[in-house]
Length: 429
Image (cartoon, rainbow, N blue to C red; front, side):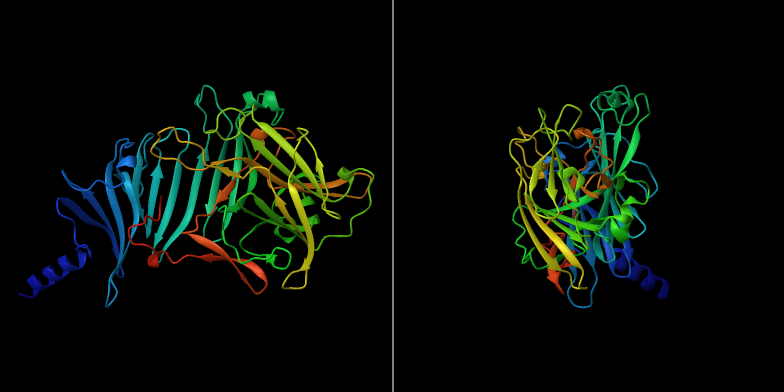
């Protein structure tokens, strides 16, 4: 009798905590300490999750993936993902042309290899429910191995709210750009990824008064991050720390504890910030390639004056400058750089069921000079002068995953509690 009771109790605990819809099949794929991950697959005549995406199904099946908590009083659920998906084992590899779902440890992992040119992996922690990390490839190359194109490998760590990337450029394209050396194999070049908030982020943030905190990317100074383009291996730590955050078409930049700028006859020899933007010349769906347009502007640290650089741009950004102190008393020179073009564009999808904003190439650099020459030049990217394909991209921050708020005089990250979000709104989308 006791064995029967034990068997029934185990079956009840393993059962899904939400009713399975009629004409659908549900199964528990993860169950640990009150948290379940449940796959719901529509049967014939059942509801089809996100029919537009399922039309792109490449070997998988359409399904819902629910995260479910087992609290004492009222259970809570949240849709993690809906769409085409092939369920695979934790350590199995997803094949090219397929979208795969798997549970690895306490994480839900979505491997989207449905597109040959834009593969991605997104990881969602289940205890607690939170985005962990994302990895994306932009423009993997229409010619594959026979005709490699430059592409950008981007990784974003949500726990650190920080991103890193690498621009990978082939030897064939190096013959056009001169970087890296002609004939070299595909060579990765590191990049610091800038976070980008939506066009209207509704920030209660006064850039003239509040410092950029954890909501911004940082390079130089004590961080040691950034690519030394000039000045040797120690150049990154020898320049002031630079923090930057994009919000729509505006780039906010804080230069922390800068040294007094030496007067210079040429702006290139004085301390300044440099902005590089790469624009698509013909194909709005491609990461900037070798035939895209690159433009450069220099912004004087001492006066905020804009100097057109490479590409001789006819129109430049509108720049505002201010001086302030951080919460720790650090002297800061701040800029609000209103760009001519946003860092992300939502182009017409031409009837495509899936359309995402397309990034523009971007790089931010800091140049330190003594008034007669450049001493150090450190950038977010290992950029090649005038080469749009060597520029990185910014990473869009969805408002339903994170926002920014001023705390203690600095703009800090505010992670959204996903368990309290709309139940039917997928975490991964």
